[in-house]
Amino acid sequence: MTEHRDPSAPQLDDALAPHERLDTRSTASTVVRGRPASDGRTRRAIATRARLTTAARTLFVRDGYASTTVAAVARAAGVAEQTVYYSYPTKAELLVGCLDHAVDGTDRVPGHAPADLTGLAWVRTALEEPDASQRLFLHVRGFADLMSRAAPLLDVLRLAGAGEASLAQAWEQDESRRRAVHEALVETYLRDAVPAQTTEHPPAPGPEGATDVVGLVLGPETWNALVGRAGWSRLAWARWAHRSLLAELAPGTVLGSST
Image (cartoon, rainbow, N blue to C red; front, top):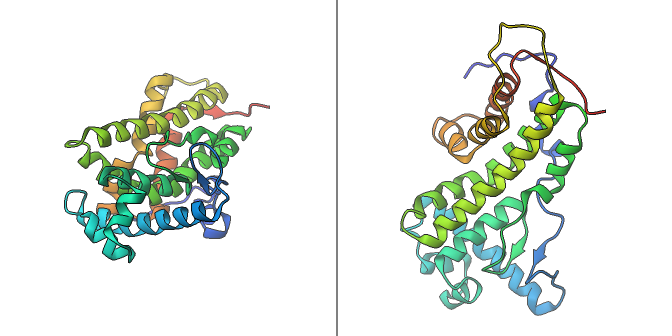
Protein backbone atom coordinates (compact mmCIF):
# COMPACT_ATOMS: atom_id res chain seq x y z
CA MET A 1 0.00 0.00 0.00
CA THR A 2 1.16 3.58 -0.67
CA GLU A 3 1.61 5.74 2.40
CA HIS A 4 1.95 9.50 2.87
CA ARG A 5 3.74 10.85 5.92
CA ASP A 6 2.65 13.77 8.03
CA PRO A 7 5.98 15.43 8.92
CA SER A 8 4.49 16.85 12.12
CA ALA A 9 3.31 13.47 13.40
CA PRO A 10 5.44 11.15 15.55
CA GLN A 11 7.48 8.84 13.34
CA LEU A 12 6.11 5.36 13.88
CA ASP A 13 8.83 3.67 11.83
CA ASP A 14 11.49 4.92 14.25
CA ALA A 15 9.29 4.25 17.26
CA LEU A 16 8.62 0.69 16.15
CA ALA A 17 12.28 -0.14 15.63
CA PRO A 18 13.18 -3.08 17.88
CA HIS A 19 15.65 -1.14 20.02
CA GLU A 20 13.13 1.62 20.73
CA ARG A 21 9.95 -0.33 21.37
CA LEU A 22 8.08 -0.01 24.60
CA ASP A 23 8.51 -2.94 26.95
CA THR A 24 5.02 -4.36 26.57
CA ARG A 25 5.61 -7.40 28.70
CA SER A 26 5.51 -7.87 32.43
CA THR A 27 8.69 -7.47 34.43
CA ALA A 28 7.84 -10.64 36.32
CA SER A 29 8.79 -13.95 34.74
CA THR A 30 6.34 -16.15 36.56
CA VAL A 31 3.33 -16.16 38.83
CA VAL A 32 2.50 -19.38 40.63
CA ARG A 33 -0.61 -19.22 42.79
CA GLY A 34 0.01 -15.51 43.24
CA ARG A 35 3.66 -15.75 44.38
CA PRO A 36 6.94 -15.57 42.45
CA ALA A 37 8.62 -18.95 42.24
CA SER A 38 12.23 -19.57 43.26
CA ASP A 39 12.85 -23.27 43.94
CA GLY A 40 14.50 -25.51 41.36
CA ARG A 41 11.50 -27.74 40.78
CA THR A 42 9.27 -24.80 40.06
CA ARG A 43 11.84 -23.26 37.73
CA ARG A 44 11.96 -26.50 35.75
CA ALA A 45 8.17 -26.52 35.56
CA ILE A 46 8.24 -22.95 34.26
CA ALA A 47 10.80 -23.87 31.61
CA THR A 48 8.68 -26.83 30.55
CA ARG A 49 5.54 -24.69 30.22
CA ALA A 50 7.46 -22.15 28.14
CA ARG A 51 8.71 -24.93 25.87
CA LEU A 52 5.21 -26.33 25.50
CA THR A 53 3.56 -22.99 24.76
CA THR A 54 6.20 -22.16 22.16
CA ALA A 55 5.54 -25.42 20.35
CA ALA A 56 1.77 -25.25 20.79
CA ARG A 57 1.52 -21.66 19.54
CA THR A 58 3.00 -22.64 16.18
CA LEU A 59 0.62 -25.57 15.82
CA PHE A 60 -2.50 -23.71 16.98
CA VAL A 61 -1.90 -20.81 14.59
CA ARG A 62 -0.93 -23.04 11.67
CA ASP A 63 -3.42 -25.89 12.05
CA GLY A 64 -6.21 -24.47 14.20
CA TYR A 65 -7.45 -25.55 17.60
CA ALA A 66 -9.43 -28.64 16.59
CA SER A 67 -6.66 -30.08 14.41
CA THR A 68 -3.92 -29.58 16.99
CA THR A 69 -3.54 -32.63 19.21
CA VAL A 70 -1.77 -32.94 22.52
CA ALA A 71 0.35 -35.69 20.98
CA ALA A 72 1.46 -33.30 18.22
CA VAL A 73 2.40 -30.65 20.79
CA ALA A 74 4.40 -33.21 22.76
CA ARG A 75 6.31 -34.27 19.64
CA ALA A 76 7.02 -30.68 18.64
CA ALA A 77 8.24 -29.84 22.15
CA GLY A 78 10.28 -33.03 22.45
CA VAL A 79 8.53 -34.24 25.60
CA ALA A 80 6.26 -37.10 26.60
CA GLU A 81 2.53 -36.62 26.09
CA GLN A 82 1.98 -37.04 29.82
CA THR A 83 4.28 -34.05 30.43
CA VAL A 84 1.86 -31.86 28.49
CA TYR A 85 -1.07 -33.04 30.60
CA TYR A 86 0.93 -32.55 33.79
CA SER A 87 1.61 -28.92 32.85
CA TYR A 88 -1.74 -28.19 31.19
CA PRO A 89 -4.47 -30.71 32.12
CA THR A 90 -6.60 -29.78 29.10
CA LYS A 91 -5.93 -28.54 25.59
CA ALA A 92 -8.06 -25.48 26.35
CA GLU A 93 -5.77 -24.56 29.25
CA LEU A 94 -2.78 -25.00 26.96
CA LEU A 95 -4.23 -22.48 24.50
CA VAL A 96 -4.86 -20.00 27.32
CA GLY A 97 -1.28 -20.59 28.50
CA CYS A 98 -0.03 -19.71 25.02
CA LEU A 99 -2.00 -16.47 25.18
CA ASP A 100 -0.58 -15.64 28.62
CA HIS A 101 2.97 -15.92 27.33
CA ALA A 102 2.11 -13.84 24.27
CA VAL A 103 0.39 -11.05 26.20
CA ASP A 104 2.94 -10.26 28.90
CA GLY A 105 5.54 -13.02 28.97
CA THR A 106 4.40 -14.14 32.40
CA ASP A 107 4.04 -17.79 33.33
CA ARG A 108 0.90 -18.69 35.25
CA VAL A 109 -0.44 -22.03 36.41
CA PRO A 110 -3.70 -23.14 34.74
CA GLY A 111 -6.79 -21.64 36.32
CA HIS A 112 -5.16 -18.30 37.13
CA ALA A 113 -6.88 -14.94 36.89
CA PRO A 114 -6.11 -13.27 33.53
CA ALA A 115 -3.47 -10.57 33.44
CA ASP A 116 -4.67 -7.02 34.14
CA LEU A 117 -3.41 -5.06 31.15
CA THR A 118 -3.86 -1.71 32.90
CA GLY A 119 -1.05 -2.70 35.26
CA LEU A 120 1.54 -3.23 32.52
CA ALA A 121 4.42 -0.76 32.41
CA TRP A 122 3.80 0.37 28.82
CA VAL A 123 0.15 1.11 29.56
CA ARG A 124 1.06 3.20 32.61
CA THR A 125 3.69 5.05 30.58
CA ALA A 126 1.14 5.89 27.89
CA LEU A 127 -1.53 7.04 30.36
CA GLU A 128 0.93 9.21 32.27
CA GLU A 129 2.06 11.04 29.11
CA PRO A 130 0.85 14.67 29.51
CA ASP A 131 0.47 15.39 25.79
CA ALA A 132 -2.76 13.93 24.38
CA SER A 133 -1.45 13.32 20.87
CA GLN A 134 1.68 11.58 22.15
CA ARG A 135 -0.49 9.59 24.58
CA LEU A 136 -2.50 8.22 21.67
CA PHE A 137 0.71 7.51 19.76
CA LEU A 138 2.09 5.46 22.68
CA HIS A 139 -1.21 3.59 22.98
CA VAL A 140 -1.12 2.61 19.31
CA ARG A 141 2.54 1.65 19.53
CA GLY A 142 1.88 -0.57 22.54
CA PHE A 143 -1.03 -2.31 20.86
CA ALA A 144 0.96 -2.83 17.65
CA ASP A 145 3.50 -4.71 19.74
CA LEU A 146 0.80 -6.62 21.63
CA MET A 147 -1.18 -7.59 18.54
CA SER A 148 1.93 -8.78 16.72
CA ARG A 149 2.30 -11.42 19.43
CA ALA A 150 -1.27 -12.14 20.48
CA ALA A 151 -3.65 -11.49 17.56
CA PRO A 152 -3.06 -14.81 15.73
CA LEU A 153 -3.74 -16.71 18.96
CA LEU A 154 -6.80 -14.59 19.70
CA ASP A 155 -8.21 -15.58 16.32
CA VAL A 156 -7.75 -19.24 17.29
CA LEU A 157 -9.35 -18.55 20.67
CA ARG A 158 -12.35 -16.75 19.17
CA LEU A 159 -13.09 -19.55 16.72
CA ALA A 160 -12.55 -22.31 19.28
CA GLY A 161 -14.83 -20.55 21.74
CA ALA A 162 -17.81 -21.36 19.54
CA GLY A 163 -17.55 -24.98 20.62
CA GLU A 164 -15.97 -24.83 24.06
CA ALA A 165 -17.44 -22.80 26.92
CA SER A 166 -14.16 -22.28 28.79
CA LEU A 167 -12.56 -20.77 25.69
CA ALA A 168 -15.59 -18.57 25.05
CA GLN A 169 -15.15 -17.26 28.59
CA ALA A 170 -11.41 -16.71 28.01
CA TRP A 171 -12.24 -14.70 24.87
CA GLU A 172 -14.73 -12.55 26.77
CA GLN A 173 -12.19 -11.93 29.54
CA ASP A 174 -9.61 -10.85 26.99
CA GLU A 175 -12.06 -8.49 25.32
CA SER A 176 -12.91 -6.99 28.71
CA ARG A 177 -9.30 -6.37 29.71
CA ARG A 178 -8.47 -4.78 26.36
CA ARG A 179 -11.55 -2.57 26.64
CA ALA A 180 -10.48 -1.47 30.14
CA VAL A 181 -7.20 -0.16 28.70
CA HIS A 182 -9.02 1.64 25.90
CA GLU A 183 -11.49 3.19 28.36
CA ALA A 184 -8.62 4.60 30.40
CA LEU A 185 -7.09 6.15 27.28
CA VAL A 186 -10.38 7.59 26.04
CA GLU A 187 -11.18 9.19 29.39
CA THR A 188 -7.96 11.20 29.40
CA TYR A 189 -7.84 11.79 25.66
CA LEU A 190 -11.30 13.34 25.41
CA ARG A 191 -10.56 15.41 28.50
CA ASP A 192 -7.48 16.94 26.86
CA ALA A 193 -8.89 17.39 23.35
CA VAL A 194 -9.92 21.06 23.20
CA PRO A 195 -12.84 21.65 20.77
CA ALA A 196 -11.91 23.87 17.85
CA GLN A 197 -14.08 26.85 16.99
CA THR A 198 -15.50 25.35 13.80
CA THR A 199 -18.65 23.67 12.54
CA GLU A 200 -16.90 21.92 9.64
CA HIS A 201 -16.35 18.69 11.56
CA PRO A 202 -18.87 16.21 12.97
CA PRO A 203 -19.06 15.98 16.75
CA ALA A 204 -16.65 13.65 18.48
CA PRO A 205 -18.14 10.43 19.86
CA GLY A 206 -18.88 10.17 23.56
CA PRO A 207 -16.73 8.03 25.86
CA GLU A 208 -18.54 4.76 25.14
CA GLY A 209 -18.60 5.30 21.39
CA ALA A 210 -14.97 6.39 21.38
CA THR A 211 -14.00 3.25 23.29
CA ASP A 212 -15.87 1.17 20.71
CA VAL A 213 -13.89 2.86 17.93
CA VAL A 214 -10.53 2.32 19.64
CA GLY A 215 -11.40 -1.31 20.32
CA LEU A 216 -12.29 -1.91 16.68
CA VAL A 217 -9.26 -0.15 15.20
CA LEU A 218 -6.78 -1.76 17.60
CA GLY A 219 -8.53 -5.11 17.88
CA PRO A 220 -7.27 -8.54 16.82
CA GLU A 221 -9.92 -8.89 14.12
CA THR A 222 -8.61 -5.77 12.36
CA TRP A 223 -4.99 -6.83 12.83
CA ASN A 224 -5.66 -10.30 11.43
CA ALA A 225 -7.60 -8.90 8.47
CA LEU A 226 -5.00 -6.31 7.46
CA VAL A 227 -1.71 -7.85 8.60
CA GLY A 228 -2.54 -11.54 8.63
CA ARG A 229 -4.59 -11.77 5.43
CA ALA A 230 -4.03 -8.59 3.42
CA GLY A 231 -0.28 -8.64 4.02
CA TRP A 232 0.18 -5.20 5.59
CA SER A 233 3.35 -4.64 7.54
CA ARG A 234 3.22 -4.00 11.25
CA LEU A 235 4.34 -0.43 10.60
CA ALA A 236 1.66 0.16 7.94
CA TRP A 237 -1.01 -1.05 10.37
CA ALA A 238 0.29 1.21 13.15
CA ARG A 239 0.38 4.27 10.88
CA TRP A 240 -3.15 3.59 9.66
CA ALA A 241 -4.44 3.02 13.20
CA HIS A 242 -2.83 6.23 14.46
CA ARG A 243 -4.25 8.33 11.62
CA SER A 244 -7.69 6.75 11.99
CA LEU A 245 -7.91 7.37 15.72
CA LEU A 246 -6.65 10.94 15.42
CA ALA A 247 -9.45 11.61 12.92
CA GLU A 248 -12.20 9.72 14.76
CA LEU A 249 -11.68 10.51 18.42
CA ALA A 250 -11.59 14.29 18.26
CA PRO A 251 -12.28 15.62 14.75
CA GLY A 252 -11.53 19.30 14.35
CA THR A 253 -9.95 19.67 17.79
CA VAL A 254 -6.76 21.09 19.16
CA LEU A 255 -4.94 18.57 21.32
CA GLY A 256 -3.82 19.90 24.65
CA SER A 257 -1.86 18.74 27.65
CA SER A 258 -2.98 17.64 31.08
CA THR A 259 -0.32 19.83 32.67
